[in-house]
Length: 393
Image (tube, rainbow, N blue to C red; front, side):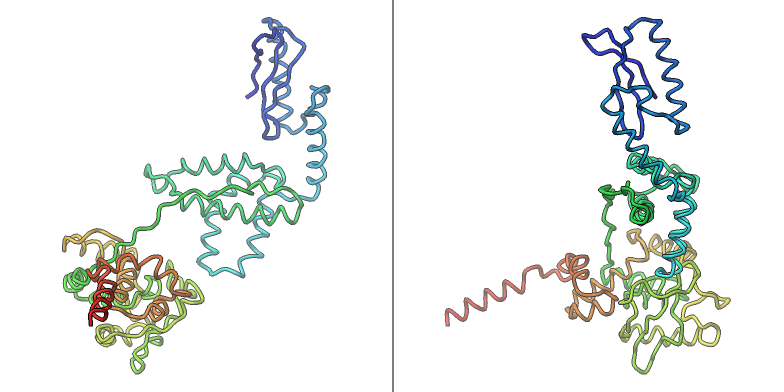
């Protein structure tokens, strides 16, 4: 909001206001008197109305200002852009139509939620070239105050980053097509906390398996000893279980009740069945084969609803057994750490997990191996001891 001020050592009034995202301060030839302040207040009221309507011309009010030429040139450029630059809503719809062929259905749905819930309510009727960096930063700040599910919980930094990434993709593409500066340039992502990796010990795994409800024992044996993602095991159908080769073929994933392709190209893989997994699947074959195409299903033959399973089975079992609360995704982390602690080849483990290479494996899981084996540095100590013995002999 514009204000009227004086500078120290001067009796002349100056005005302080915002225009085109910039702070402007212009000195007048009016001395500081009540009458002049009242007169200047009326001028400012008219200025603010014109700025709001988009009809304000800097040089008309401050012809001798050094900023007048700058804003005049900027206005001319904006007027030329205005004729061929669409509104945000129009371009966002075009952008989504062009890009959706590259995305899985679940990702399309995610983008549509971000557009409809966050971006369009804010920017829908704004001309693309009129969106400034200050607008983008103000929007990001507003997201930190958004609450959800009728609680006081606010959006996480990761969720805000996901919303901002979508906005950045749209404005980056638009700026290339319509030749204006990308207002999202150089805006960094918010720092996010690393997701907690809390694998089970082998003793905790067996406590859980022996303590879980009997009709879910096979399900959790397969989860703990294959490293399958929730979407992969819930979407597993009998056509992809090969008892002769003792392999589970990952070719699909069930996300929010919709069958789609696995998360990444590398996620299409074959998982070797350990003896425990083989026996669990054989037992499950007697339960669900012929009743449902899904390996693990509800009593009606429908695929499992992981929200329901988590609420009714996973979390109550952890609580009843006195085990630390954690997400069911930790079964995947558990498989990786157990394989590593058992000395399996990292390349083999990476293939079982569906990773591109071993980099993710060492980065995420290797720090848990010493705690699992209780042999920190023992191999190096043995090497040194043997070398001393060789020298002595």
